[in-house]
Image 1 (cartoon, rainbow, N blue to C red):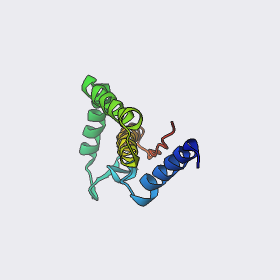
Image 2: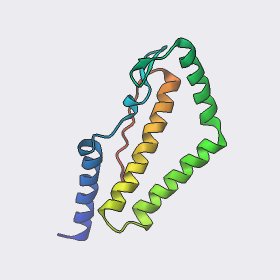
Image 3: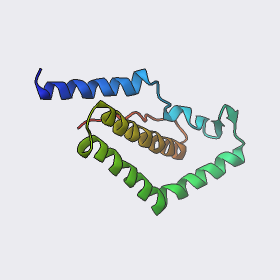
Image 4: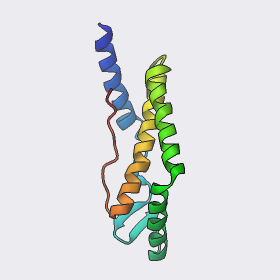
Length: 126
């Protein structure tokens, strides 16, 4: 089998493993949003005041330099793991899992601002 065919198979297998085999936590499992003012944390419904406070904190967090720097730093490490440091399947999986978790956080922040659930799963393509 050619090297390029192996790489394509590896990418597809890794996406399958991350999405289906690991049964990873998704954005839907983090701060469930049932409706505009009905949110759940660890299965407990939050008060309207707690939801209001979280929405305000989310807006502040998205504008913080610290959040942008942490996000960029994590993406940089993930890309290095996928491109520069990759020595095998384990490195590819680790890099893709890091990107997956970043996408889960981003999706939750977006959904918090819109009061509705939205997709978070990002298929990694190179």
